[in-house]
Length: 318
Image (cartoon, rainbow, N blue to C red; front, side, top):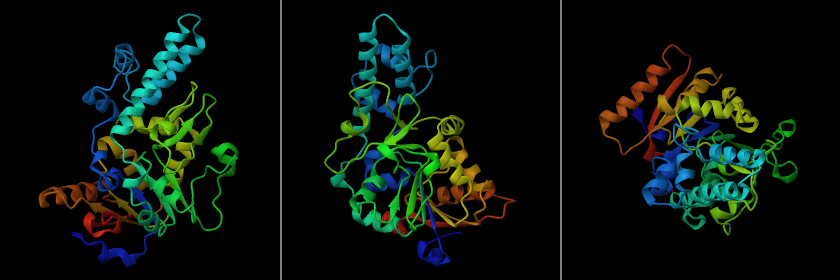
């Protein structure tokens, strides 16, 4: 039931979906529960009042972006204690930067050229990861053969200018990414960077209001609501729903609690063949259980499912 990538490679796979297992394969730093838990576990400095904003009795989220937006809106409507609110905003931002830095690799740790060569074999790339690995890999080859829809003025995303030309491979950040930001006016843009930029340069901002655009936490319903509320993320998800080409899913847990919006999109899409990597480090019974759950989910559909050992795919041999 679970074979090797070489057994199915010749069937023709034009689309790729990357999950966090891909990033963990690059570095164990990506093996963490959540950014907010990183703040608590590492003792990253955050004002007690700032930390309390994440609680169920306040904003009720573990996504830093939502808290930053609430603080920014409070700054806009208040007449008193503006400096205190401003300091609260930058305290949360600094905590986010430190949390991401603690769980991210540096540019020099990523085999960017090799990754770019592998990614270039696909006609479309989707990722639910918000790290910088795919972006750095494309920067390494000066985006030759790739595109990301941020080619409008100011590196903005413009829905009216989102047609792919020249046979380039587009990448869709289904959950956003560290280098993407949203302005108070709702404009989504990317922060251009190379290997010399630090994560602080990317996430940080000298002013208030421009918040990082990435979904780091939440169950599937929460993630989908966030996706639907942002015109760039919604564009990516709608494109995923319409995917027609055979798809390879690599490093993705496809957990119904956290990823059902991904499973539903796959089920609703017109594509026919789905190849799914199974983490080779699992026990045999766990591998079979994982595959059985996926088969059960797609029962009654016209999808052909193929399972392969993750270690047999080029993306695991980096």
